[in-house]
Image 1 (cartoon, rainbow, N blue to C red):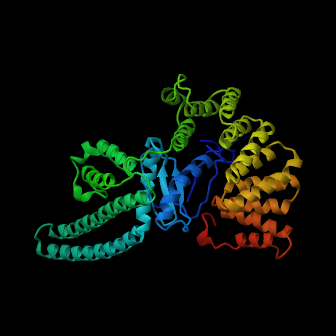
Image 2: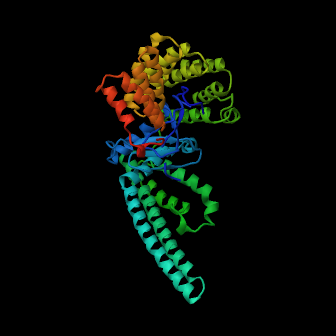
Image 3: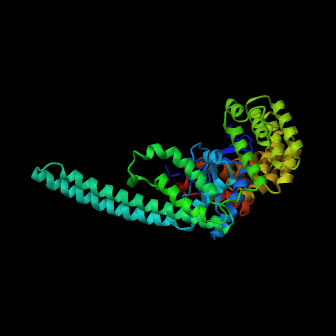
Length: 461
């Protein structure tokens, strides 16, 4: 997307995993996210997805759990949960979903997994399977020893493989049961919120048709999900029984959905792809949005700003258009010009930390020491809501440096290094910060915590 440390409103952050651009392309430590996941951060997209998920989470009794939706920079269609705090969804799913109701259906299904406690139950099943697998392995080894002594063929190897194959099939059958339960729960949540299950059904039908050819040649007992025809048939009965089946998405929500897809395309697709998907003859707001973003990313900066000004004229109270204008100017080397539209974006968005970070970066990039105090205030406010933002800490270090506050600059730089996993550098900077800070002050304590972090918690010792 863009070099680390540059301001974007659409960012890819490298998070911290185990399963197989916006403000600043930051190397996010995100301790509660899986390592290596390419995360897309964008205020407009995140707000829309929160609006999609909130009613579902509320009716499932999970609204107080702080569940967050995380968008992954992956063009494959997928969504999943790995813990009780996040619903992960690929950008490819957002691209492919034609209506808000389709994505809401995906969230309803994934919430079914969360509400059903499927993750904990699966861990228990895996622990049981691991124990059974060890027992089977030991039994197989014993059989191999007996076979070797008797010289009676390769019975021992079969004794190892057969139980493990049965364990695998049992586990997959359990997971397929969970998927079916999540489908049922998802429809229940949609009904409780007065929303249609049509989107979920049509999405699964579309995906099922794509997989139908391959499904003729696979073993149904070695799949983690029910086969498409079976799943769609069961879901169709549930969905059509709902009194809300024919309810459509409000036009304003559909527009926000289309704008989200246009934004993703503008940032992630090549110009030729944008030209095909959003030709010049298409004068809709999403098409103009995608073309403006693509122009700023790949074309003439001033032409992009002119296109963005046209978007602002169409929707003068849309904070994301001002954000995009500020982003284009900032990355085009005009930070002073970027400040006004970014201020407008911050004012209209009413508390968007990613926008605060970008405005702070623009203020710092002007090189004017008078802007440093405002940047410090903005970045600290952003960090109160985004406490693991590596880029915010890096910008904060520069802002403090411009103010001449070297102690706080060292501490912020240490926190940035710690967040990106460079604990050796973090300790060095924190040690220097301690010599400049009043002993026992809150800042000194934070620096001391970094100095004394245990090596077992560190990426670098």
